[in-house]
Length: 53
Image (tube, rainbow, N blue to C red; front, side):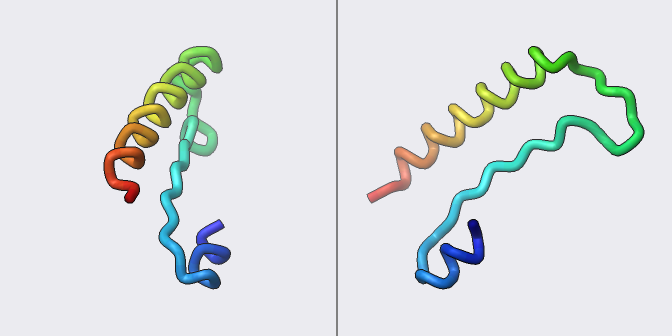
């Protein structure tokens, strides 16, 4: 996605989520992780709406 934005000389806003470290036991259940990711993504969308022309 970032490469496409660069080719078209456009800005990109990328959101990534790492659920847990390789080989580590997860401290969150899948449902908890989904809820956290949804909340954080919503915050990002709110920020994007404020900065978009």
